[in-house]
Image (cartoon, rainbow over all chains, first blue to last red; front, side):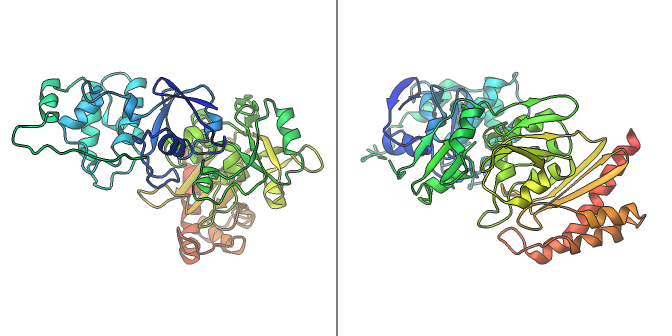
Length: 177
Length: 269
């Protein structure tokens, strides 16, 4: 079976009755979607399927067909963040970061289908199935609204993401696979 | 490759789905997957057998204006958007928007009691909406009132459900705040030509009509006293969501609330 993830075709040998989350992480080594509760209650594994936010832990790969799957890796790049990623960064909307990719995907789906700017109520409804255990909800909601009106500063974001001279260089080893 | 083996069947029409289901022996139906997929993740499914995947079987959609026919594979979001009360309110109260886009009407109706609690929040409104269930399985296709369907507790493939939009309706549900769980208790009411029908969910393994309460109200008993009759026709149990005691205490309160809502709705007409 073949799945289209972030624009690229990927072959899988898993049974059609396998959760998309398992295939993404364990076969494809695409680890942006996080396993949280693994029963649909937390939102950390949310990806877009043909632009619609879906729980990848609840989605059998046999149901996907040729629909386009987008994970957080397909949203932007470290060099060129998507607006919603930039506003999450600028507004400190991530703390531990575990819920962030799910929040970003649900937020992006809202931005895709809504007139700008989105209202607070729209954001609350769109993110209602997403749990942040650091409880940083206010900044997360602010960041989605800011992204909808293009209130982000690329220069400032770039500066924050660039290691400063006095920061020790940290090399991350190993892989998530 | 965590999943162990299951033969998957992907029928491309209703007729093929009925054929593939057969008498249901050894078949597990995968509709939206919101109940079955965690079982896969936890390694409890599959254990051999066949998995009947219905996403291509053409069982989704809502048709009709008088009596309305709802296909088994219709997502809950679509049922909520259609606005037929009290069903729409019940569908809109299930989980969150993303789950409602995936979970199906038929899957919710068929959901067996979970390990922790009763499931199938839509059973409650369907019981008061004169719903009839069209299903296939051993003995062929049949259509029967939803009450009979739930009581039979057989392995059958639900194809569609027909409901009659009532003149007046109300739905109340008691859920744990900030959680995603099934209703602790739900109560639905519908009126047809001035005749009231009531049902409750979360007070037994599946939802039940509250006939004794209906009869008491028809006899002119005040709502509070009539609601007390529900204790005789329900079997609340302890589970992870709430204790049987809590359910017994809260049920008459929700019945009174739903009666008040249906009365208010009628006074506006």
